[in-house]
Image 1 (tube, chains in turn brown, cyan):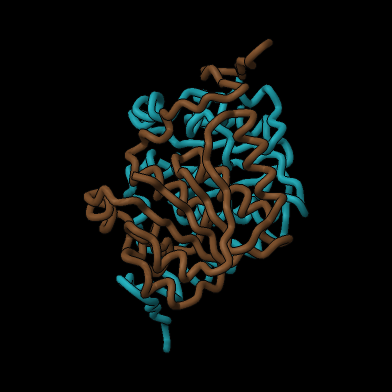
Image 2 (tube, rainbow over the protein chains, first blue to last red):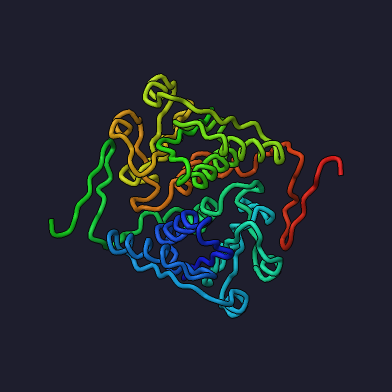
Amino acid sequence: MKITVLRLGHRFSRDKRISTHIALVSRAFGAQEVTFDAADPDIEKSLDRVSKEWGGDARITSITNWKKYAEDFQGDIIHLTMYGININDSIKKIKASKKDKLIIIGGQKVPSEVYKLADYNVAIGNQPHSEVAALAVFLDRLQEGKELNAKFQGKKTIIPQEHGKKVIEQGR
Amino acid sequence: MKITVLRLGHRFSRDKRISTHIALVSRAFGAQEVTFDAADPDIEKSLDRVSKEWGGDARITSITNWKKYAEDFQGDIIHLTMYGININDSIKKIKASKKDKLIIIGGQKVPSEVYKLADYNVAIGNQPHSEVAALAVFLDRLQEGKELNAKFQGKKTIIPQEHGKKVIEQGR
């Protein structure tokens, strides 16, 4: 099952850090690709830098026509929105399908077509909070936490510690 | 069990949106209080506005001496850090205790004392991503998803929809 994250409505200066967090969460929580409806070199650089240092091969891409992209997608389209069905009531059905997943995250103003186009509109609780949080919790529930045990082959590897930091760097 | 989130190292202009997301995630995922080591009226306003509209009574506070605050805390102190023990290996023990929880989230530069002071240093995966994501996944795992079924008594209430938006507003 391939997981792609589609981030809509990225506004450059205002959203830079939030969108960077979305890209990093996508990578760390097992998505193979994250795509934006606007190419932002800063975010691409951030993800590339992390992947070079810590490993993994998550791709970051950009598209010009998100609607066509979603319509052409072969698999399940999941739109994360506080107006959707609570994940506690919807995740079981979504997990039962082994099809590829396209996870759509909008900003404040999501075009109403997204709600229609999505196979599932899923709420990570029906309260306003954060698209970064929503994405992480969805990916964690979808993969039952196994994504957090994935091995990344990078220059740096953390050796988990009860107290303190231990990092092994290749070639040192 | 009372849950408090302590956000360290908030830098005003740079972190405003990330810290706002932390405050909103704290509220939406069942924390009763979120405290910052710097008072930022903008974040306080954001949380108050959301609580007025959507309900809930999560408090936002600020402190001047985080170390004393943490040392005086009665309960389990959990520091979320990519250098810690993977949540998959540590959550069971943490859940077994019914004590109040203080969840510490640092920025890029966390004082090394935090690692010593914490009862548990927990990694939401040993990869760099997002403190917003880490907080949400930790709170979701700690409360086994039940936090997302909590009812908030606000002016607005969402009626979850398969496709589209439905919001009931009190007095309309």
